[in-house]
Length: 244
Image 1 (cartoon, rainbow, N blue to C red):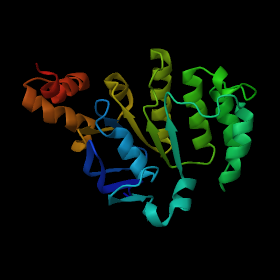
Image 2: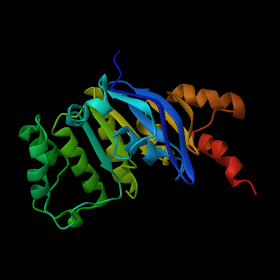
Image 3: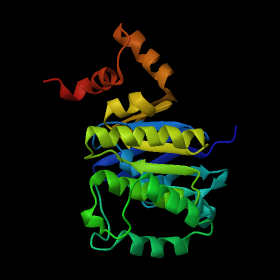
Image 4: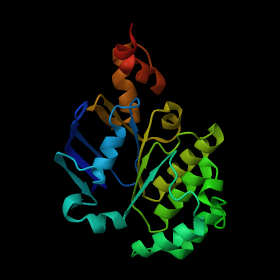
């Protein structure tokens, strides 16, 4: 099966942080949870994949195309959203849509109307008037309205109440059934339990594992001597930094 996303040997260095040869891939219809504590390198990785931060080394392919040489084509089929951040707060939803739709060759007004109705988004409201959950749904609507085949979401459930988080995990599963690949970063393990097919774990800029969720749990079950939850595993992995 052709990979939707292939990341190989991705590196990025800052004075106090180093992203070290990150390698993983995502298949069509796969929901991958990108996990690690705050500051582990999740956002740096996602931004490097999309060239929002220029990586020092490594290769990224999306839908079989090298990102560096096919950026325009790749972005036509990729959606990106960040939780907890709002742009153009005073702009109305409909005005942001009017501008955004001009950038995409495959923009579909019918799909846009479908998701606006399904997510109960009022196009006349300003971004600052939307709840955090509705903002994330609006960003998803924008991505899905140009038939994105890959969604890259940085902490999309950040700051959301439990009900809104549950709604998003259901949406991810529905999108996966349509063949959309979803890569989302999070440190909220309960979200992963509900919707992730696979887990990619990063710590201090180094990738520790990237595998199917059940395999990931079994890997640490043998080390921990019990069948752990994902939260148990995260605590176990990070315990060296918390021991005093």
